[in-house]
Image 1 (spheres, chains in turn purple, green):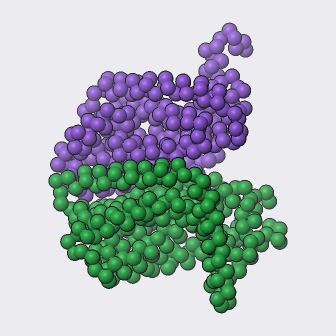
Image 2 (cartoon, rainbow over the protein chains, first blue to last red):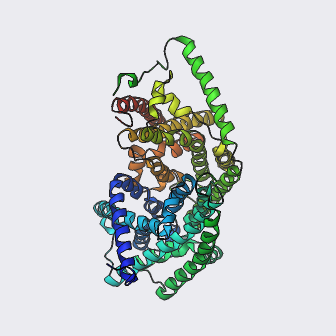
Image 3 (cartoon, one colour):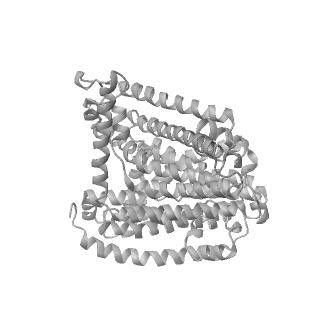
Length: 269
Length: 281
C-alpha cells in the first residue's frame, strides 16, 4: 500500500503493530507482571490500617466510603505504573537506543506501547485480585454505574499519560547523568504521600491539602479514584487540571529530548 | 550438567577454627573492596540521604494523620508507634546495606551464567552470594532508625530498661534473619524462573506493612502478617520487647521462626542448586 498517500492509515498500522508485538513480548513475562501486580497492594494494606483508626470517621468518611476509596486507589495504581526510566536508563547506557533512533519513529512511542501492552497483560491478574477481595469481604466492592466506569477509565488513562510525561522528563536526564533512575526515587516520595495513595486527601490538614492540590500528584490517584468510587468530584476541572499539567510537562520534555539527543554519543561517551 | 559444574560445598561450620578464620578473612576483604568501589559515587550519598529523609517525613506525616484526634493506634501510643517505625527504618537500612547489593545480583548470575564461577569458588556459595558486597548507602536509614527508636523509647511511658534492651536487640536480630531468609529464598527462585528479577522488590513493597504495629490491622491481615509474610516478627515483636511488654509466646515464636527460616533458606538453596542447569545447557 502507498504510505505517502495515506499517512493516517500507515500511522495506525504502525501503532497496531507496535502494540501487538509488545503485547506478545509482555505475555512472555507474565509471571513477572503478576508479581508486579502483587506489589501494588499498598493501598489495600493502608485500608487495613485506616479501618482500625478513628481518624477517617473524624474526617467525615464512613467505613464504606473508606474501603471503596482505597480499592479504587488500588485499581488506579495498578493501571498507572510507569517504569520508563529504568528501561530508558539501561538503553541509553548500553547503546540500545541507537538502532531505535535510526527508525522513522520517535523512540518514546515504543516505550509508550510497551506500557500499554503491560497494562493489558495485568488485567487478568487484577481481576483475580478483585475476585479474591470479593471472596474475602464482598462489602469492599461496589458496582459502579456505566458513566462512573467510563469516566473513571478515562481518568485513569489520563493520569497514566501524566505520570508517563513526568517520568519522561526525569528520563531525559539519562542523557546527562549515569544514575538518573536515582532521581526517580526522589520523585516517588511526593507521589506516594501527596497523591492520596496512602491516605485520603480529606484527612490531610487544610494547609497540606492545599499544598498537595497545587502539585500534579493528586491528579494521579485522588481524582481518578474518586471518580471511580462515585465520590462527589468536579469532573471538568479534574480533567482540565490533568490536561494543563500534561502541557506543562510536555514542552520541557520535547526541548530536553532535542538537546539530549544531540549530546547522546551512543555507548560509553 | 557437566561434571565440573557439580557444586562443591565446603563445610561452613565444620573442621575446627581454620574454616571460620578463612571465612572471616574473606569477609573483611569482600567488604573493604566493595565499600571502596561504591564510594566512587559520592552524589549517591546525598540522594540517598534526601530519599531517606523524605520517606521518613512522609511516614511520620501519615502516622500523624492516623493519630489525629486519637490517642492510640491499635492500642499503641504515638511514641510507641515511633519505635515500630524506627525499627522499620533500621531494617530498611539493613536491606540497603547488606541484602539488596548482594541478593539482587543472584538473578543476574543465573541469567548470564556467571553463577557457574561462583559455584567453582572454594567457598560456600550461599555465603559468597549473601555477603560479597556491603554498600554504605543504607547508613542514613540506619542512623535515622536508631534515633527514632531512641526518641520513642525515651518518651514512652515505661522508659528504658536494660533487660528489655537486650531482649529487644536479640529479637531485632532474629527479625533481620527472617528478612534475610525471605529475600534469599525469593532470589533463589530465579534458578527456575530466570526473569523474577524483581521478586525481591515486591517483597520490599509488601514489607511496608511493618511500618505500623500489628494490632493496627484487622484480624485477617494480622494472620497474614504473622504466618505468610512475617512482618510481625520484624517490627512489632522487637518493639514490644524494647518497650518492656514482651510476651513469652511471641518471643519463642520469633526465635522459632528465625531458626526455621534460616534453615529453610539453606535447604532451599541446596535444593535449588540441584536444579541449576547453567545458562547455556
